[in-house]
Image (tube, rainbow, N blue to C red; front, side, top):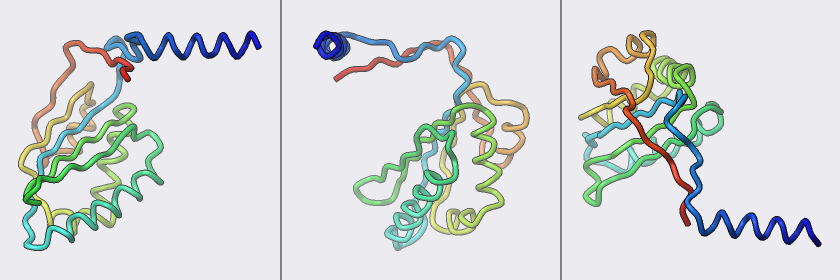
Length: 148
C-alpha cells in the first residue's frame, strides 16, 4: 500500500510541476529541419513515399529520436523534422539515404527549399551533406520540459 501511495504522489508531483527532462549541457543530438516543395502534380505520390519511408526509418534506425513530416493544406509544401541521438546516427541516416532505395523517388517528387542542421555536426557529417545544405548551426542554450 505504501508503494502505491508513493507512486501516486510521485506521479501527481510530476503532473503539476515543471520537470526538466533535458538540459543543453552535454547534448550531442543532431536535428535536421527541411522545407520541401512538392514538384509533382500528384502530391498523393509524395505522401505515399513518405509513409513508406517513415515505416522503413522506424524499423532500421534505432537512434532516430523522431522523424516527422508535415504538409500544407494545399499539399505544395512539406516540412520534415528529424532528431538523431548523435552525430553518428545522423551520419548513418544520410549515408543510408544516399545509397538507399528512396533517394531517386524522393527527388522526383520533392525539392529541398531549405535544410538546416542543428547540433554538433562533425566534419564527416558536414561533408556528407555537401550539395544538400551549407546551413549548420550550433546550440546556444535551451531546455526541454515535461508539461501536461
